Length: 87
Image (cartoon, rainbow, N blue to C red; front, top):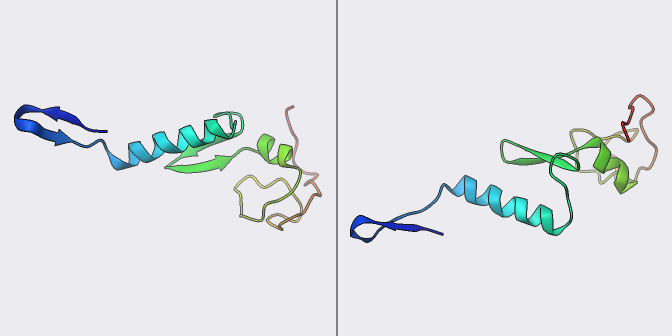
């Protein structure tokens, strides 16, 4: 996407903004709900504990809000008992 202005000069939108826009569309396509399943922070997708609980197992990717114990162990299904959920 670009906009033409005087003398046919094109202005290209900020690449970071364009990437975030594309990322949000991808998340909508996979039925992620912003603010409930994830939030964006400095261009990164941060999955919420509520979403991680819906997955039913650890992905092993080092998620910030990993709810499994021990954390970051792919396939782990044991919930960390110290975490409370507001369902």
